[in-house]
Length: 83
Image (cartoon, rainbow, N blue to C red):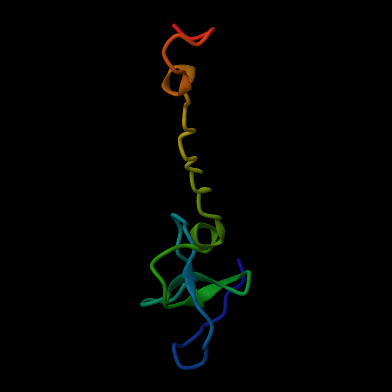
């Protein structure tokens, strides 16, 4: 793990918390990801970098119902083929 201290004023980029059980950073700091590099700092986001990079689930396509036509509606009384 690369150790480097980042202050909020020094970094304009988004800082994502790095999920880990161990913290080797100085007091008040935690592992963060900035530009793909893990270092020590204060996160500016509450989601992790991997959560941010996941694509949203594709939206379900909704198809319009097809209209059904009945031959009975167009048959005149007594025409062959109509009952």
